[in-house]
Image (cartoon, rainbow, N blue to C red; front, side):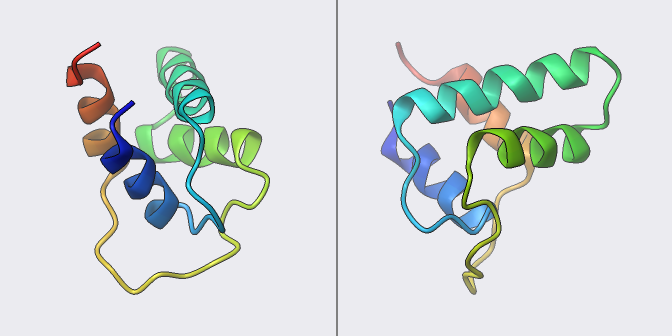
Length: 80
């Protein structure tokens, strides 16, 4: 898994530690499912994060966080 994406999720959702590759994949799957069901992209990403990352929004990092769209695109385009 691309560690850069894990770091971006870590910052975006204010996590206390980097998510595992399995957690990243689970977040992407749930987010995509919610979008397919008609949920807005931002809301889908937030809802999935709250389901997958128990420490969601525990921290606040002073850096530019990626958008949900950018995170999903990076996961879709990564080499397997």
